[in-house]
Amino acid sequence: MRAAVLRAQAPIETAPLQIEMVPSPPMGPGDILQRVEACACCRTDLHVIEGDLPASKRPVIPGHQVVGRVMDTGRSVSGFSEGDRVGIAWLRHVDGTCRFCRSGRENLCPNARFTGYTDDGGYAEMAAVSAEFAYRVPDDLPATQVAPLLCAGIIGYRALKRSEIRPGGRLGLFGFGASAHVSIQVARHWGCDVYVLTRGERHRSLAQEMGACWVGDATDPPPKRLDGAILFAPAGDLVPVALQALDRGGTLTLAGIHLSDIPGLVYERDLFYERSVRSVTANTREDGCELLRLAKEIPIRSRVETFDLDRVNEALQAVKAGRIQGSAVIDLSENDHTTKSEG
Image (cartoon, rainbow, N blue to C red):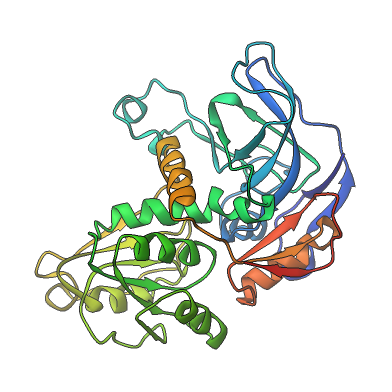
């Protein structure tokens, strides 16, 4: 099969992903083999590729927002048949026995494994995953629309829950990329007023189009104090800015897997009055199932720009530069692969 392979971590500008012919993914008795239709691009892929995250598997096929059709199932798999559409997300294995797994916090399992990092991912014509970690995904939407929900969507949803925002509350989104453009749809569904603070006129324009009640630069103070906020941008210098925008009792959630250093905080200015900071680490499978149910109910529509597999480096370069409105998606369907916008 054809796949985009990373052999050594390097800046994405150097085009480190090489398109190669590699063997089909190995399958265990509990696994599903999938023919990939689409795989969305994520900033976590950049952290894997560029070395912000320590190297794990070498070489590795990145990509962890994978949608495709079942090609084959292991002998112990039940409930999935050839042709079913399934999704593969970042979290792909937990031990099930540690105290975190036993208490419903499998996202904190110290023996977890991750798609496109510890195991090969979806920038390829085929991918495999344990049936226990395969999501049933909608058949009535293009695969390119569904793919961003499998990380951008799930992590954004977990970040919303961690922010403790309540229906009708005032929510701030710092950064407006792939996750934020899904999160705003959930927050608006909950009746929240959403304040978007982001760099770049294109992102601010999209936020207004998607229902933000106020849009400003990342460092602008919003016109009203916020009940909760999510920092999507991997910029630690925005943590004090976001905390100062919170009302009493507000919570700031840090949604990224990587964040630059946070400058010193001033207790009375930044944290007093029971303001708090919480991080997000991966997600539970229940998070994913909840988000996919919501996606159908709302319904969520992803704004995507598609690229074929040969242009995967270009797609990730555009993500890094902030040139994508919504999500970049690698389209591996049999359709015409010219770059296009959807949503």
